[in-house]
Length: 54
Image (cartoon, rainbow, N blue to C red; front, side, top):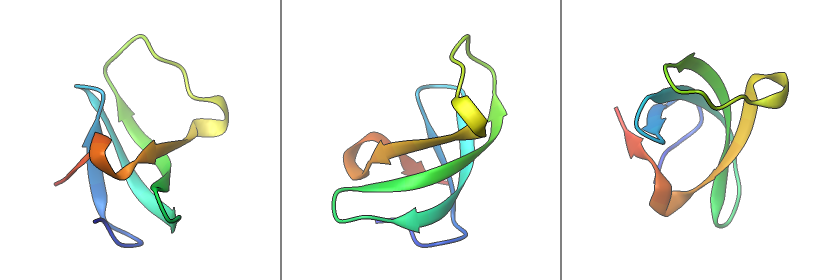
């Protein structure tokens, strides 16, 4: 499980920094996005099973 400040990758081309940890997910500030996905306010929530710590 990622900690606050850890860099993670998800969705095959999106990277971000963990800002807040929830029971089943983390809030991420998106820092790199090479996909066609758009994130409102450059933040998103990702479930623990859907990311890798870099």
